[in-house]
Image (cartoon, rainbow, N blue to C red; front, side):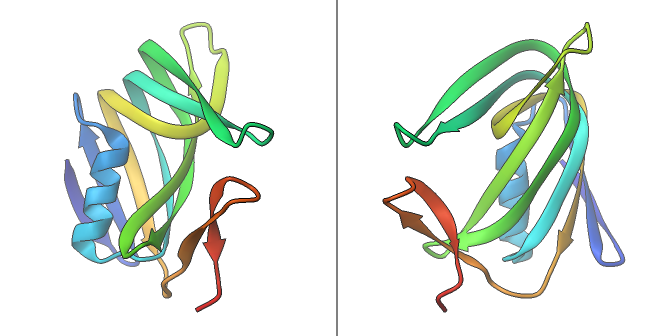
Amino acid sequence: MKSCRCGDFFYLRIDRGEEIVGEIKGFCTREGITAGLITGLGSVSRAELGLFDVDEKKYIKTEFAGIHEIASMNGNVSRMNGETYLHIHAVLSDRECRAFGGHFASGIVAATCEVIIRPVEGNPGRKFDGEVGLNMLDFSD
């Protein structure tokens, strides 16, 4: 991965074979980004998207093998238990331009992945909500 700062934004180029979510999380941790917006595009050779089943309170994950475009990737940065926490969704498209979207659990870069992170002031936290079954944004501090 390579990166540069451009004003209030960080531009990341995540390279072929690298895992996207892990690279973004590591970058945010190293740079001390505790809150921010994430956007990106690129391509993956393998990815995993999820849908949260509210009745069963768990993610149903679908794996995608083969080349897919990342048509859109959006998310945010917060903190949970003192660590960087990412919440990212993505839309992937196949050779026929069919789109699949969901919670972006992981993705291995096929050619490149370009990510822009805009840090914002603050330190939003997360806390597990047993009723919902998710790590929800928490503003109690």
